Image 1 (tube, one colour):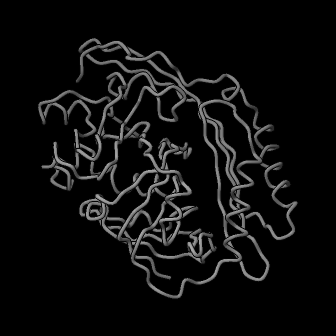
Image 2 (cartoon, rainbow, N blue to C red):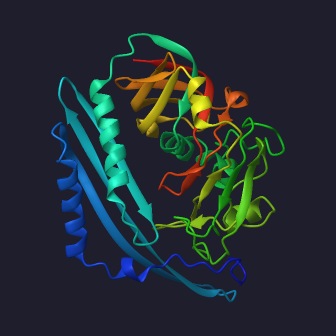
Image 3 (cartoon, rainbow, N blue to C red):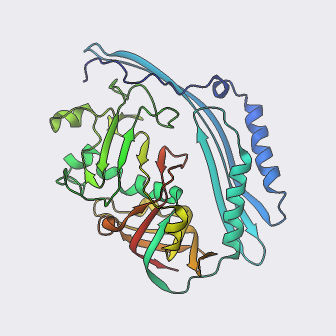
Length: 342
């Protein structure tokens, strides 16, 4: 068990507006999302959600830890189907710690993706080359492929491919930080579930692996300090990321798109099948685009596959870091040497 320590920051992600939001207002917001989406003659609503939640927890142990924390989360999203000469899908959502409502940006993104998907053509071939992942699908890939490999539990169990690579360059130019102290962060809190203060830790510095995510148990096993990443839903104490930040690079999104054969947007199907032990992945991109003559041509869903460590040296992050509303903040990322089929 950890010893008592003070918090390393003072921001509490609690909004009274979220905590007191009546169910009737949440239902009305859901109805408004649906009604606004249906204004377009080609759009059908497949599903929508609106949620508001409040959490509070108290931590105490026999070593003198006695602390508490609270927080709120608010979010909404919508999945649309476009129906016309063909069919297409589009999804968008927003999450925050406060009561921030901007349904039109969510609707615009979901509608654009659905209409483009409806007009999309089958790729009809296999391409091996540069693929630009927009921030949202890249965040999904990171959560499934990199985060488990960065858990010290995976290291101790012998599953992490990064277990013997601290100090080595393994992720190209990327700098990735786990920051549990970020103001406004979706996963920010004062303490983890063991009462260890949340902190900012660099996981990759320009591609060089600096360390892993720890709870008290793994830190003592590996003779280091806990990083404040203990997590528990029920049962044993595990490890979870907080706010994961991928730093931006020097290129514009437009420049990276022009260097790509395919642009991946929307969400990734079958992302749960990736193999974090090897780094291999094969995912279905819901909203891809073919880059042709400098323009983005919508495609039907395609399969994108590769190994993140084998192509790491060619990774290129865009300049602008985006909030993906998942607790991951990342720019668009250009991959080289991926295989695209469909």
